[in-house]
Length: 411
Figure (cartoon, rainbow, N blue to C red):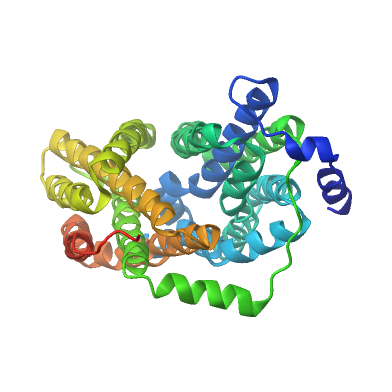
């Protein structure tokens, strides 16, 4: 770690003046590195989501207990975003991101050997802890090293890599697990994570503009206080919490429903549902741009209302309507998420890094807390319980979205 920190901080004055621009060789290296970072993070974080029915059968546990494999990773990661950002401010962005990717991949490999369920949960918590050093630091790395006109496209590469990683990680796990068991799938994912980490280490451009910063508790608390006193930001944080909770709940328990009668789909067929994430990638870019032009506070409620409609469709009996409902939920969620996250960055005229970290904190806590709580709804009332639970979460989010219409833009 010390050697890495020295190599990224000892940049020449000339290098510090140069920013990475679109079309250059450095940008092409950055593009591959960011794609690998996004892929690795979200493939390793959510790779176990399609395996929840496997875990329930293998370890003899219920759905709520199985969902902890997802919730512990996302929950621990959420709680360590801000500390990871503070560490990166001190020792550098690349050392933190590189170490996070290698450690999380090695922990995923080790998970394939753990025999007990409690041990698996402990490993998921450690993986979440390790992965916190990527999402919370990638934005700072890009903003420091890339010129202003190129920042948007560079972050788009990271988000695209994240979406592809989340989708292929889930789908790949289902296919490999069906033929080689879930332990073989976990080992394969760990190897994939190591390859991604090696490519990131090899191609990520060295930090030229990084300047070490030391934080104290007073400065962090002062910035947090300023953000929480804003009229819109706390409401947007709650929106991330509620919407992510509903979205993850739908995907967490869809496999339990579709593998049971009357559908009795195979594991790989259920895993193919994650291909719907492609629709989410398109809706995120399109609606995010539309909301930026027309006004986020005017349009934000629309995808939230659409999300409620999608949840209602999933309560139908016909398989085609259920799949259509999950597609609508995916499109609506990504549109709402891109709008809310963009609004946070636009609203926070100062303390933007901490504003983004707080949004991510609430966002992933929604996945961890509300996603696991959905298991109790499933245990009590099956999919009808899931539909009512997610509708209630989204209805609260819709009320908040309507309230946000009245919040004036900051001068």
